[in-house]
Amino acid sequence: MVEALLFVGLLVAVFVGFNIGGSSTGVAFGPAVGSDVLGKLAAAALMTGFALLGGWTLGREVVAKMGGEIVPQNEFTLAASVAVLFFVGLALLVSNTFGVPASTSMTAVGAIAGLGLAHGSLDAGVMLEIISWWIVAPVIAFWVCAVIGRYVYPYLDAWLKLDRSPGALVALDRNGGVPRPRLGPNTTYREFGSTVLVVVVACYMAFSAGASNVANAVAPLVGNGALEMNTGILIAGGAIGLGAFTIARRTLDTVGNDLTQLPILAALIVETVSASLISFLSAIGIPASLAVSATMCIVGLGWGRATRTVTIGEALSGGEAPKVSVNALAAEREDEVPKMGEEAPDELSAQDLFDPGTTGRVIFFWMLTPSLSAIASYALFSADII
Image (cartoon, rainbow, N blue to C red; front, side, top):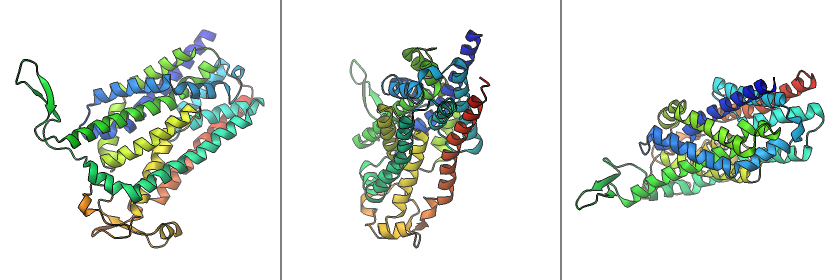
């Protein structure tokens, strides 16, 4: 019976990691694949390697926090561990059904908190620390990107010039005994450097995804001793890689070509800020959502770009909607960057970059999924069904 339950737990853990790999690969490498910098196989391979690296290093702190600090390790019986992982899988289903980036980390913590409340073993101090960071982290993500969007973005775009030129980025020079790589016929050093930057930032995003998400797949099983830490991380990393090589192909197409209208520079800013924030939280053992941080970065960047034509006071007071150029998040050249407070010729209301209604719906589901997870978990464990 124990072996069968452990097998079920491993299956659920692999299912969770598989779905995390499918969704996180698109978020991390969608811009690189969509701009033809990387192929899908290369993106999947890099995602697998860097997600495993993130889990193997910073991810240990998150596994330890979720697997034995929110509630004592002895609370994680095999049955309880399987139930917690089930709620994480349920969060993925809710996320996919409603098209909202629900947080598997927050849902997993909610399920563990429900277990602790039902048995009177919840560490309130640890839980308060985690919830505090859940509130603070999205605010930090929003305002960092808002400042970048308002004051820095146009000048970065004019300097980096991330547009791809026609032809190969790198070619082989066969003049001589040994072929040597050189820049393509139309490639500048700036273009080559910016292309390398796209790949580096995508790998950084994959690293942070692994650091924050391996715990979602295996923390309960590690917490109850069914798996050793290293074994659990390898299983989670392998499951993420399996998702990267299979179902991530669709998310790469969606994020890279269909879903987002962000140009490469905006995507790089979003990825860098959100990955840095999640890596920091993982290093201090806080299970947090990469999807939540990335979404708030997008909202903040759009809001910052939309308010370049007004003062901060006017923007915060909710007066007349600020105007921005039609390509407000697209390429701008240095001699075309409007000064602060000036309006560009082709105007678009700020609502095209920042939709309060959509933002409110997303935030509502962020709060709903961990709350439902905690309530359902509390009801399940209070009833002593398992």
